Amino acid sequence: MKPTENYRRQHNEIVDIARKIEAGIAPGKLPAGTGDMRGLMTTLAGKLNVHLAMEDDALYPRLKDHSDPKVRELATRFSTEMSTIKPVVQSYMTKWSDAGIRANPAEFTSDTKKLLGALADRIQRENNELYVAVDNAG
Image (tube, rainbow, N blue to C red; front, side, top):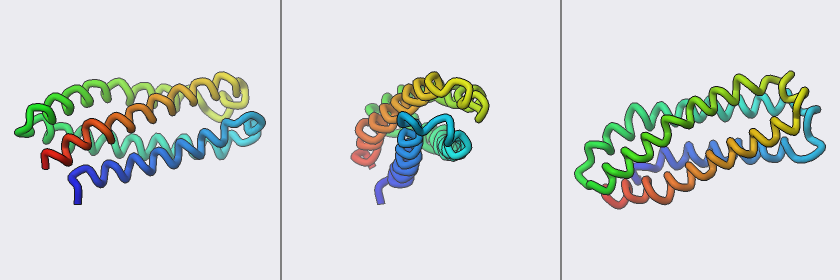
């Protein structure tokens, strides 16, 4: 079992939910589906919070003390970058209630695409840079 297997599994779960959200913001889907959308958003936020907590509490502290300097540098960089994502997700969740989605579906769609794009980029970079380095270093 690779050291990052559980984190990769969590990434896959987050991506699956993000795809459902993307399908729900397709033209003609909002504002009728705001209840379902809000449920998906809540599920996404919950999975992200668990994932981020595991990284912050277990993964990054261990990697910052790793014997491989490349792993230490990547862990420090990714940890610093990640500290900005959690407040963005919290702000998004607060802003986009059912009523907010119904009142401004175009802005909601735009904000959602930006958030999901940032998460997809982050997941891709973690999977292809940080996790590869960790798995290779053992």
